Length: 575
Image 1 (cartoon, rainbow, N blue to C red):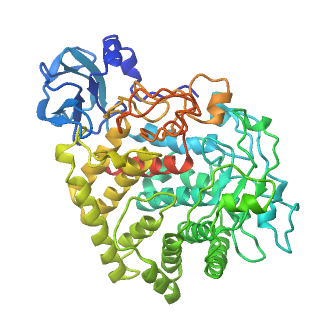
Image 2: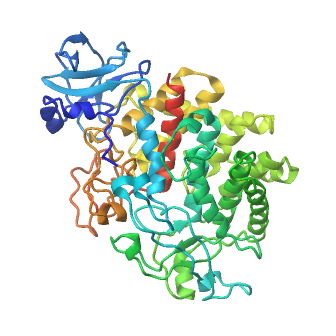
Image 3: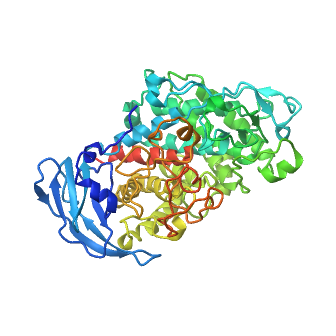
């Protein structure tokens, strides 16, 4: 597999070398749709001699108009926002301003390549199987972490499964830059992509990502999700329905390949948050896979597992995962990702919602109504109520009152976000408050918000929400304060050194493509431990492309899930 560059033609344009060096022009580096809003940002208080040339002929074909000047809300930086939406003809072009220039592309399937790569990244991150050359090219690797002898940690011990005994828990994806597997993050990741699939089935059905399952009758995206769902089923204790919080080594592995990892792996304490999340995603998956010809027994199995998990969670409301407390009581101590969450109300709301939509059982409706939030906030692995709110919006037939209430909350939130676009530095509805930047901000503030706007567009038909979702994608792809296209393997300037063990240890110069990095994080939690010097402390510039930067440059399955969910949906509707 060669390094993917949707703007490969641009690398042959010698005039871009200067533009890449000074980065005066910021725009979407992978491609724009003919009829989308097209905006670039000039890193200067004034912009002159703004022209657009045909990349092949050099002929000037259009001009861009200045929309406004924009001042950063946290620094004195002034920028000029220019619009060239009138240009709708597919082709390869060069935008010039202030004596600088940058190439760009207009095409009908502008996000197809990056969406496909983002989905394919999950195959490249599979645990428990050989990653084969015919599917992975240079990113092929031997099997790692078969997980056929996973030990029961003392915190997870029961009469039927005593400490030190073993279970089989193969398959699944490596969670992030590390090699462990976590239920709460897996559930969130699978759900985000399933919901995008549900709204765009024909689009995803047509995508071929070249994975071992590509020749069956199921969409490649669903095949990939099934690979992880099958692992998740092994994490449920069949004796009581509870779900182990994670499958992990006691300590993070070094930056080595999976085949070279030899620490004992454990399943640890069952948690109420993991169990509710498991119940929710199994109920959702049971519905999506109901008529699957390739997985005919899964829907029934998933529905039963969801019911059992929900009952366990109801009976264990205080079983919250507290790793520090666990380590004081049990050995070996565990120091990997906690995914700690001390409020399970949003998880119960999501699980009750999915089970009610699946079964129409009144008890689940009552639980959903009693745990429903009073407003809408951006979703994340630790706050999953918005997933249920999305569901209620599009399943009005399940309960009109709940659907109307959730729709009002989401639209109020969306309109508040959109109100900031007119004065934004980069023509975006998010990224205009310092609080928008932090750990995983590109996934949450931009991709997850973008999906929220798409749900708003789905139920209202209003163009403003579709435009807002595309603006979020434009930010990810280069129209931002750093000038990075934040997806590996794409654009003129993208991350080369993500905090991910495989990309670090595989001996390949380019990281595996299609990975969304966390993004600007003014917290800089890795600054001292990794001996980093960030190029800026400004909220939207606090990013460094360095392997040691787990605060700004790590990758994660939940972040990529929102990338897949947003970009695939956009590529289907931006016609």
